[in-house]
Image 1 (cartoon, rainbow, N blue to C red):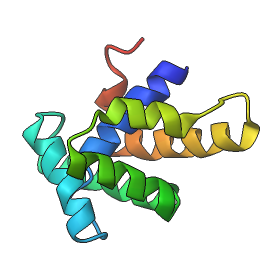
Image 2 (image 1 turned 135 degrees about the horizontal axis):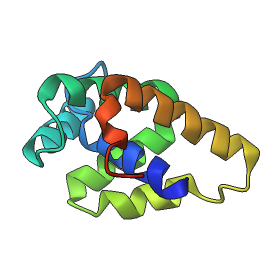
Image 3 (image 1 turned 60 degrees about the vertical axis):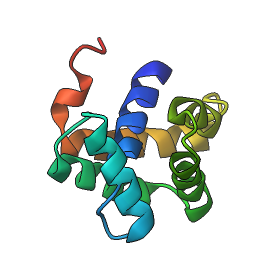
Image 4 (image 1 turned 90 degrees about the vertical axis):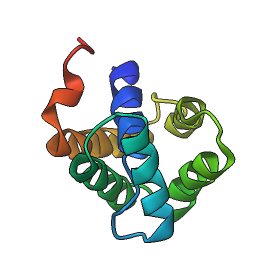
Length: 111
Protein backbone atom coordinates (compact mmCIF):
# COMPACT_ATOMS: atom_id res chain seq x y z
CA UNK A 1 0.00 0.00 0.00
CA UNK A 2 2.81 2.41 0.87
CA UNK A 3 4.46 1.86 -2.53
CA UNK A 4 1.18 2.52 -4.37
CA UNK A 5 0.66 5.76 -2.46
CA UNK A 6 4.26 6.80 -3.04
CA UNK A 7 3.95 6.21 -6.77
CA UNK A 8 0.64 8.07 -7.00
CA UNK A 9 1.88 11.00 -4.95
CA UNK A 10 5.15 11.18 -6.87
CA UNK A 11 3.32 11.28 -10.18
CA UNK A 12 1.11 13.97 -8.73
CA UNK A 13 4.12 15.95 -7.62
CA UNK A 14 5.70 15.78 -11.02
CA UNK A 15 2.54 17.03 -12.58
CA UNK A 16 2.13 20.10 -10.49
CA UNK A 17 3.14 23.07 -12.60
CA UNK A 18 0.28 25.22 -13.94
CA UNK A 19 -2.25 24.97 -11.22
CA UNK A 20 -3.38 27.70 -8.88
CA UNK A 21 -0.04 28.08 -7.10
CA UNK A 22 1.52 30.13 -9.88
CA UNK A 23 5.24 29.73 -10.55
CA UNK A 24 5.82 26.96 -8.03
CA UNK A 25 2.96 24.90 -9.38
CA UNK A 26 3.99 25.65 -12.93
CA UNK A 27 7.47 24.36 -12.18
CA UNK A 28 6.03 21.05 -11.00
CA UNK A 29 3.65 20.78 -13.96
CA UNK A 30 6.45 21.46 -16.42
CA UNK A 31 8.59 18.80 -14.75
CA UNK A 32 5.73 16.32 -14.94
CA UNK A 33 5.13 16.97 -18.63
CA UNK A 34 8.85 17.03 -19.41
CA UNK A 35 9.34 13.65 -17.75
CA UNK A 36 6.49 12.20 -19.80
CA UNK A 37 4.50 11.26 -16.70
CA UNK A 38 1.21 12.59 -18.11
CA UNK A 39 -0.24 15.18 -20.45
CA UNK A 40 -0.37 18.79 -19.29
CA UNK A 41 -4.05 18.72 -18.32
CA UNK A 42 -3.53 15.69 -16.10
CA UNK A 43 -0.37 17.17 -14.60
CA UNK A 44 -2.19 20.40 -13.76
CA UNK A 45 -4.96 18.39 -12.10
CA UNK A 46 -2.53 16.34 -10.04
CA UNK A 47 -0.56 19.36 -8.88
CA UNK A 48 -3.81 21.05 -7.90
CA UNK A 49 -4.71 17.96 -5.88
CA UNK A 50 -1.38 18.18 -4.11
CA UNK A 51 -1.86 21.85 -3.31
CA UNK A 52 -5.32 21.13 -1.95
CA UNK A 53 -4.24 18.15 0.17
CA UNK A 54 -0.77 19.07 1.41
CA UNK A 55 0.06 21.82 3.86
CA UNK A 56 2.13 24.74 2.54
CA UNK A 57 5.33 23.53 4.19
CA UNK A 58 5.07 20.06 2.65
CA UNK A 59 4.17 21.42 -0.79
CA UNK A 60 7.10 23.82 -0.47
CA UNK A 61 9.49 20.93 0.16
CA UNK A 62 8.39 19.33 -3.10
CA UNK A 63 8.80 22.58 -4.99
CA UNK A 64 12.27 23.11 -3.53
CA UNK A 65 13.29 19.58 -4.49
CA UNK A 66 12.18 20.26 -8.07
CA UNK A 67 14.07 23.58 -8.13
CA UNK A 68 17.21 21.90 -6.80
CA UNK A 69 16.92 18.94 -9.17
CA UNK A 70 16.72 16.50 -6.24
CA UNK A 71 15.13 13.07 -6.26
CA UNK A 72 11.41 13.60 -5.65
CA UNK A 73 10.89 9.94 -4.70
CA UNK A 74 13.18 10.42 -1.71
CA UNK A 75 11.30 13.57 -0.72
CA UNK A 76 7.96 11.78 -0.97
CA UNK A 77 9.21 8.87 1.13
CA UNK A 78 10.28 11.34 3.80
CA UNK A 79 6.95 13.16 3.63
CA UNK A 80 4.99 9.94 3.95
CA UNK A 81 6.84 9.26 7.16
CA UNK A 82 5.56 6.63 9.50
CA UNK A 83 2.45 5.17 7.90
CA UNK A 84 1.51 3.68 11.27
CA UNK A 85 0.43 7.21 12.22
CA UNK A 86 -3.32 7.27 11.45
CA UNK A 87 -3.33 11.02 10.71
CA UNK A 88 -0.44 10.78 8.24
CA UNK A 89 -2.02 7.77 6.59
CA UNK A 90 -5.36 9.58 6.23
CA UNK A 91 -3.68 12.58 4.58
CA UNK A 92 -1.81 10.36 2.11
CA UNK A 93 -4.97 8.39 1.31
CA UNK A 94 -6.88 11.60 0.59
CA UNK A 95 -4.07 12.79 -1.63
CA UNK A 96 -3.86 9.45 -3.42
CA UNK A 97 -7.60 9.43 -4.08
CA UNK A 98 -7.51 13.02 -5.38
CA UNK A 99 -4.65 12.14 -7.73
CA UNK A 100 -6.44 9.07 -9.03
CA UNK A 101 -9.41 11.26 -10.00
CA UNK A 102 -7.06 13.13 -12.32
CA UNK A 103 -5.91 9.95 -14.04
CA UNK A 104 -7.35 6.59 -12.93
CA UNK A 105 -4.78 4.78 -15.09
CA UNK A 106 -2.08 5.73 -12.57
CA UNK A 107 -2.90 2.56 -10.69
CA UNK A 108 -2.37 0.33 -13.74
CA UNK A 109 0.80 -1.68 -13.45
CA UNK A 110 1.12 -1.05 -9.70
CA UNK A 111 -0.89 -4.10 -8.72
